Image (cartoon, rainbow, N blue to C red; front, side, top):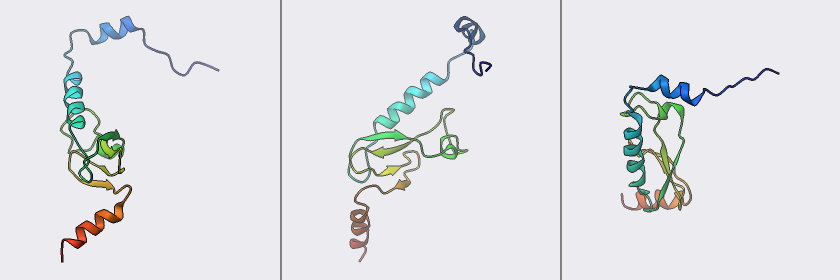
Length: 106
């Protein structure tokens, strides 16, 4: 069976990008800092990046050339889009969220 994938020689790769400005490393650093500073809007817990969808990652509203991620709380599993603030999944204890919202409206 023929080899399907062959890695590019590192020297050839380096010479191909020589002279071009690295714009992605700075963007990646800023995006990672943005994700690290986020907390769960529901319980205040720490969050981990997770893949929402291709449409979200490379959506037309993106302000970065890198793929965007969603965040999921490591405690209550609430998932949200930190770029827009929209909830994606309510996670564990979703009934408490609904109870809190409905009890304050009446």
